[in-house]
Image 1: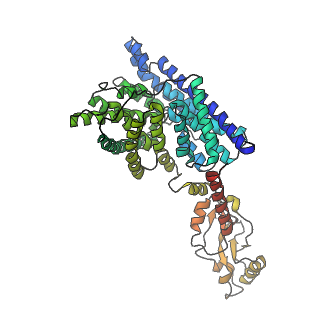
Image 2: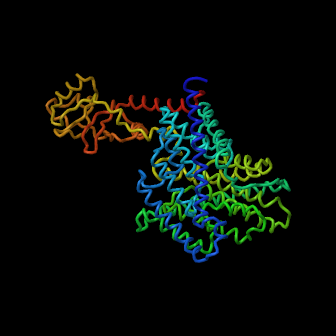
Image 3: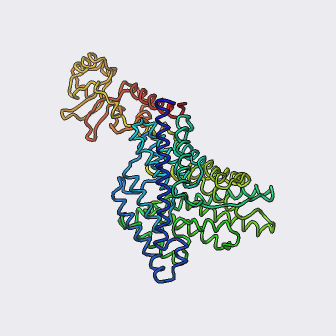
Length: 566
């Protein structure tokens, strides 16, 4: 292996090791903070001073929110970055994730999680991995395609590290971030994921999210109920996504400065946690308990999953930095356990172990939220090694993802980007064309004529330039309209040319995207379109042929990235 392929694989290796180290330190640091600040169930159980425990429950999340709000003031868009931003960077072919903003977002998420906010762990780790990949891509001086691949390498290593699932890491990077399976990207992403797995198990290894013993599906007819569970889980996933988006919209209307909203959210969360401490933090202990028969009653399962859903929407909507993956796992496992428990009571039959239903619910709720059904199923297989449990999870995921995508889009990430004006539903080529302006295509090869110029002089100017169109420009350079040579053939030669301007002529701003420009030219007849600045001054003309060339060039660069063999 020589040249560019070797270089990109070496980049993947560096990213994989770096992302794994950061991920493990990140997780270790959160656990340390949770124990120190009386957030973790173990530390709360060991604390005998009830007044201190109650004070910490309310004050600690509020302080974490205040710290996060202050950090967000240092970030470019004054909000924490998330996996959706990585998707936007890759799908628009920018190949760049801002390094400073990514690190600050990671610090803010570490504080949020360490101080007990009900947000996800894996989203921040994924974003940190992608940020590291983007940073190292600049060190390696790669092109845009290499930058996109490096981001995917960091994401793959992050998933591989936190779940001990290298295959799932590879799938997630391709399924969610790249959204293609080019061979050129597969090799470095696979290397990053595998090295992330090895590094994570060699340096500060973390315990698995959950452990499942040997399980079996008692009755084949239960697969029908797994499908029903998937349909019900789709509704839960949509409710979860709707709650987050609604709370985000509501928070924007609150008469509270953005810098203080996370602190307010932390205080509110702490007050609720005085009665229901299960809503604090990541919720890993709650997830594990959901797998144990009798750990929760049916009413407790319903109550805790509802409160966890609302608490997560509250925290994320109010501005805490964090992800949606971990809470979805907790909510899904609680819902699956509730479904299995209620089903067993209703049928009066001995069903498969409760953990089977909990895992199916967990995967069926999570997959639509993150838009990664294959990844969710493979994570189960890699973490449990159970083929039967994996097939049961697949039965639940199949319809869950289909239904949720029909009513709520591919994922919460895509919905968040759509709300910011980046619609991924039209495909990657549309995104790329819509993200490039026509400014670089503007040509000064246009005939400029004053509106008071006689028709005869205008005809001579257009003839010398070999142009069938001319732009009417005032003394101060402002665009006044367009005239066509064909309209000037049989008119009075001494009449001002401005009288014959085309009433249907169109013009564009220099910031008009290539996609928008091409749509405007669907029924256009002529050589070029005037391009104006914000003060209506003529900058030049964009020609239809130049737009088509730019369109084909962008499509070709996308095709090379998505179908390159090496």
